[in-house]
Amino acid sequence: MKIILKEDVRGLGYKDDVVEVKDGYGRNFLIPQGKAVIANNSNLKQLDENKRQQAHKLAQIKADAEALAASLADVSLTIGAKAAANGTIFGSVNNIQIADALEALGHKIDRKTIELKDAVKELGKYTAKLNLHKEVTVEIPFEVVAE
Image 1 (cartoon, rainbow, N blue to C red):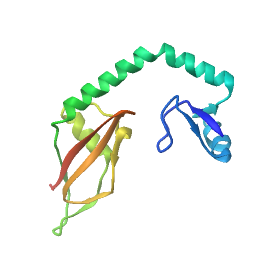
Image 2 (image 1 turned 30 degrees about the vertical axis):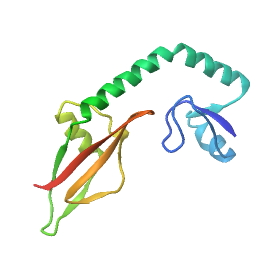
Image 3 (image 1 turned 180 degrees about the horizontal axis):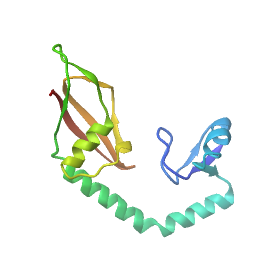
Image 4 (image 1 turned 60 degrees about the horizontal axis):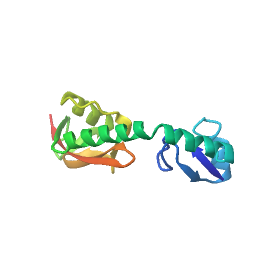
């Protein structure tokens, strides 16, 4: 089943993408949740018209994301956590703590755009991937230190 995404869906696509999904996933989840519509002729024509009208807005959004990525290129974070003597931390470091550390440096980043490869449960150096735009990503190195 072909559908048009009305919002970004992680692992599937971005807003206004036409994607192929299994019938049950489309009919039972995406369409009732308002995340997608069926890709028929009228909806595809409407999508083309909307894309044509929003082309300059999308270019500006991408330029803003690239500027933010350029300003984040030299950023390195240090996040403090309570740790045991063997280097394991109590709990874990997640995207909320990284977003808070970036906000302390003056960069307002939505925590949903921050992606960690694995759970951070030990002291050490890691990288976080920021998905600022569908074509703009940046990796931020961060270090977890004992408080």
